[in-house]
Length: 239
Image (cartoon, rainbow, N blue to C red):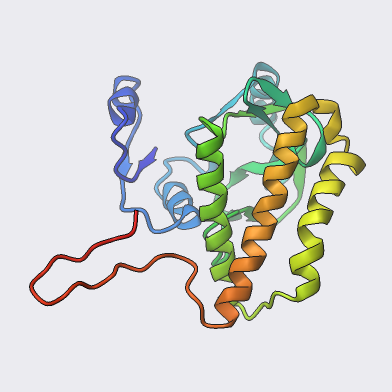
């Protein structure tokens, strides 16, 4: 496992279970995961975040693929099922949310330059396995809002560096489309109030990302910079 300074007892738990630990300063989600792949002892790797685990069906499917010599391709994808405030989201934009996490590191990895919403790509065929990767992404609504704001900023900065632009149409229409596509067209309403809240928050993510890109294009800051005090006095930060 790769750890970037956790203080919640993660390292002690990992050591008790015999895990090999790589401590590494955080430089980005993608590069952190690729560092773990590079340090792996075997060619085939299964990449999981700290808030993910495999269910029994997926475990059986992975073992069967291994026993068959991983003959179906260079990587395997499977559905990710998120637990959202006491309910598993099985509709809308939340599911099946298929992710490629089992792959031959000789033929793939966490490629590219985007450090947020990072993805694996492989050179070769990709097969799909049965079962779910279980996911508990948020401890609270405040935790979700903080994460989505951070991801929106990172994506806006990435898009700005890549030369992408935010139009007025995107600013107005993109958040609404994200909500209605997930909530109505993909059946998010079938998840009850959980699906409604999830759809609203995800639409707000799109709104934040587009606003931040709009501001960056105009030379405006999207985060509060430390305010330099008079000489000889400490720097203060907004809180």
